[in-house]
Image (cartoon, rainbow, N blue to C red; front, top):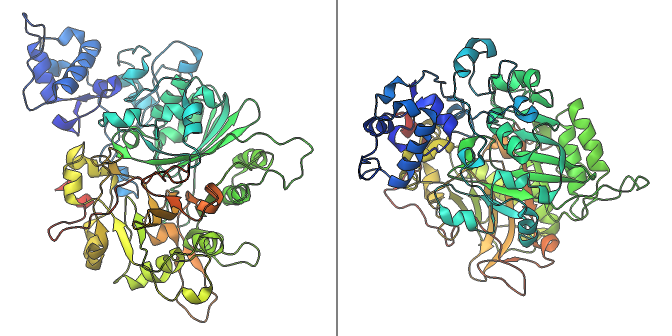
Length: 596
């Protein structure tokens, strides 16, 4: 059996994981057995007694015959962990497959091959490894063995109602117990909660998808047999063949025109049996690590009812134009499988949505007379220029992301010319926009990561490399630490991406963007610099996010910061303010540290 790449730092509590990977430190404790008098294991002081006891209980279930014996004789059912995310724009040092729970029911069986093998990640082929995987012990259907944070069912509709008017959540952190009870924390199971509606079909658009893990969540939500359309960016052989074993699942790899491009959007479309639907936009990939100890952001739409059959084609639009923008974005995939969903969106009432859709799609894009700039940083700039309240030029633009692209030789090259020149815009007369605002960037330091819940492995979602960092030493002057004490997430490394302007003096937030887009030219776009050509914004990636503008969310010019104001709740920033700049000895965390 292959050794777990996390070694002694393994935090997992999933029986599937312990059926596939060995852990020398656990094997040594387990082999000794329990003390006859106390009936307890002798756990060295350097380990967390609570965690080790839970993991040993799993070994007892999986390998009862080995208690007090040589634990190294466990069945050899190793599955090699994937390393592709460390090479991609949303990274992880290990990706562990989690198949749907074994069961004899029709739903559970539909997530397996005809030989009874669960669908797992990193299989070379279904025939080659099925004999090994069939030897895995059958598991009881206990959601707590599969999901780290379990919330009582039936309460999500109430939680969403109480999250108004922002509807923005952070994912629950396994090792931060206060986040399990926080009103604005969310788990994947809650998104599928029946209190929000009975799901009849769904779409998952994401970069990385562990289909076994995802179907496990669908199983526990009772929707495993429902039609599921998956659009994915990162190659995975399990997704290529999933339709053979799970006919309700249609998986399509989004084809990109450039090797530097990524289908990076993280979006869900949920259709309900009463004809209504819902849109969810997040920053989290659909695999275990991203929902474990990483800070992720998520926006959930209200329930969007079906329009009457005789409704006008322009009916049901939101004040922000979200409906049209979403349809235009989905059209860009050029996939016939999305057409029924585009038609469903067209026939749904989006009038309750109070945020703007901010998308990026690959290609070269120019401003049009009707819509202005359609995508990327220029789209955000167009909306700010039209709707944002006036902002003093000394108010900084604060960027925060989980990766940083190649930004140029100096801050002027792209940050000022393309990002700040757009993100500074507001509804003031054009003559006022003569000064660029200060630029601040939140990115975890080496110290932030080393103190994280998962130690250095917590940096697995931060794929910023030494080669890129060495080319832009100027960036350190603008970097700030990751701190989120108010949200109990300082030790949960951020995979969230956000952009905003706020004023600490008057405790105001002017606008806020939650998005899949990292701070990179590929995600936000870069304008051509040839003066003889009409400005063209070149974008490589698919990205999706939402823009919160106070005028449309609360009816005021700004959001309150820190405390409620006139009955309006404070905007839920994901990090602490004021920001903490890097010290002289601080360095940004680099993915290279994980390979040393």
